[in-house]
View: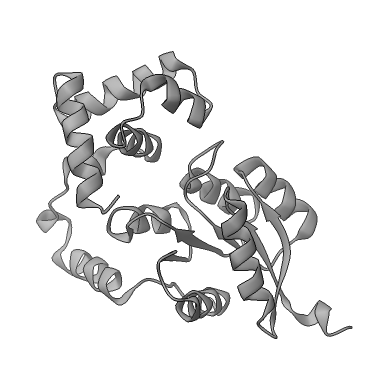
Length: 221
């Protein structure tokens, strides 16, 4: 077996070509790691996994054809042994726990230094869960407190798709643009918005917009 064949094969899934290039270059500099392929959306990722049989996948949460947590669940159902590390621009305090519940083995933000990202890759490859110390501590405290002492925020009741739409509303995107970006019909997006207002206890579109703006500021977007 050649030296190249002994390297751990990594699949990169991100809809930004520059991010894929940056990550691929960083991984290829490691003597024990190699990039076996790239994908820009969920459908392409599933095809690549079936064809290339990578040892792990690094997945962003924001993609054109689905939310990353949906892809993580699909990977878990179809390729049970494949570990997934989430590398995202989104604040971990809101998204990381959702990603782990969906089946990811780790979560790290793109703002972290390259060495930390490499540490996260190796941690996941070693069969461990990778989280920042702050988030790991928060989750342990929540488990120790027990369900009776857990206080859920209204936003926690939103699905991943509803959360994505709330985030886009907070960035000032109109319904038509959200529909185009997420490849949904305007009617479907309007249905999601109605359900979001119901879950958050908001009566008007303006109340929802103000909530969405405050929400994005709170998570640093």
